[in-house]
Image (tube, rainbow, N blue to C red; front, side, top):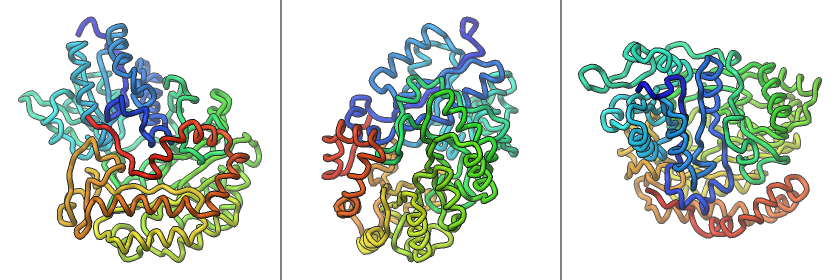
Amino acid sequence: MKHLDQRRILLVHPLGYQASAAKADIARKANLMPPLGLAGIAAYLEERGKKADILDCFAFPLTAERRLKTYLEILKPAWIGFSCTTSSFLDGVRLAALAKEILPGIRTLCGGPHVSALRENLLADYPAFDYFVVGEGEETLFELMEEPKNAPTTRGLALWNAAGEAEFSGFREIGLELDNLPFPAYEKLIGFPKTYRLPIFNYPKAPNTSCISSRGCPYSCSYCDRSVFRRSFRYNSAAYLYRHLEYLKNRFGIRHVNFYDDQFTFNRERVEEFCQLLDAKPLNMTFNCAVRAEHIDAKMLTMMKKAGCWMISLGIESGDAELLSRHRQKVDLDFMAEQVHLIKKTGIRVKGLFMVGLPGETTSSVRRSIAYLKSLPIDELNVAKFTPFPGSPLYEKIHKFGHFNEDWPKMDCMSFQFIPKGMTCEELERLFLEFYQTHFKQPRILLNYLTMLKHSPDSWLRFVANLGSFLNFARHSNSRMLK
């Protein structure tokens, strides 16, 4: 350990599937989001005197392993940390074991929703990791690096005790004040911003990026993982948001931002103040956000449009009210439709977020969702394949509702690992394709995309460059060559 740099850490975002499949992966072509969580942790550690770098395997899948080996051999960090979803966890295990082969004595740790949900029980099965960081990682990771000997009493860790058993040190009870955090270390992301791309046709200008302005969610839908932030919900102030966008524009030339928050408009005063700041001191930037229907109205939407809001995403999930009422609160599809029309009337594009395969799903319920979609003036569509993730309320009882193949590398919402009772995987795949095909065959949607030649020319360039992959997706459900 003496030859390792005790103040240095490499933060890794694993790919989760074979690197050779990345070139044809439609999801990666359509959307490559920067690992904002790792960038935030890197900024926090650097501000406190540590040295942190980021390896994003999604950005450079074919060279990621070589980059990892080179970094470890030359800079010899004492720490390596992985941020893993369920689908990328086993890839993280593989890379952690590789790191220990290259640098015996390096301390390996992992954070993210998967390990936050399963904690010490998971650690016991994967000795390639020395620690799991449970929940928010900034303070826990800094304290661990600062005083490793105090690890047993550092809150937020699953670790090995003196008896060689995996245990959990307990949750941190007080979250960080978000306005006190430095902006994410975007400069640590190789090639930023051009390496990263928002979903195709989801922005007017490039370069663009994502931004997170809140943590947690005030709601408790059955399908959402809440293991990292648990029941907390807090957000940056309007002034912080303005400074963040100003920084992105001045430092990196960013022209459009997607706020990657579950509920951007939950606090009305914050949104109104943010819009007033953009109106008083224009940045000539545009933005997208996600909202719940009950947290928008005509006055707010008008302010948001004037401030530069280009598109709003709504989590509709299903057009079957009875099915949806089993999984989320305040289900009113008529009200949802009114709000979609209101957004469109304001001149803001609408993206509908749907899900296929929830417990209780039937062929009829999917067809009702498709009919509901067709009744709405929705511009963009995203349909996810329901996956019961560890940490979600449904996970513990999912076997009561159908067949669940808990194959972690395939749990990426791009394959049906859960099959509701009375359905087959083949039926679900057919209905999933029908969902997309119904939307994109509508004449108004085709005309809409023709207008994007003017409104989002960069999207058209990407579309033409990857035409074969997009056409293949239109005919077949996407799959990846998994490890």
